[in-house]
Image (cartoon, rainbow, N blue to C red; front, side, top):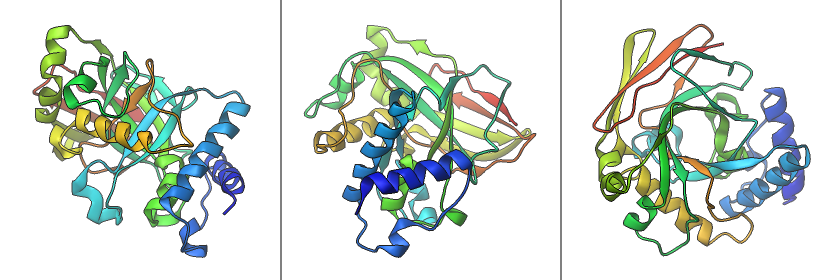
Length: 268
């Protein structure tokens, strides 16, 4: 396996909004470990052309969608200053250039400290500086969203764009109950005013802080990719199912159980 060559193929497809056959179709031995070597090479390519990694996305943390995609474990990918944008409710977002884009309502966490293996849930929660609600738009360079887990990893964790709503800094008192509060939140996702799906924080590996703890453990076993550092943001996985989007649609959310506003965006 040539990780650098695969990374160039992935980046060409992502840049062009084009699609290719899954790597596992031509090479059944292509593994998750191989794919995270591609992740490292993708980062090299993107940094070389001026992009800056500013965090991670965790995918497939929502166990309720595993059967739908045939992927039965979480994955992760980098997010960049070129793929992340802060938005306000009602903003227009450009995602139609992505191959088969889908919307995912997520909780985004801002790290105030480095995270290292061995930290428990409370220590990880205590390392969060801010929280926000955002929409990640995922994409698939593989037609019809048909792939295996290694393909998803190689495709940058399926990351397309991340739109982050208003950020809220956390007090020490809030940090004490943050893990439970985020696990207990509820969310309603609507398209053009019609309810499409509902979700709960516990859908994502029992809660967003638990999803983050999973990523800390995974990165602790990875010699090619860096650990989580102060200043990074992590989007923790979709709280509902992921849905295809079309231009001119308006997507919105309502959140209860935690002090975060819903968000609305219009698709361009």
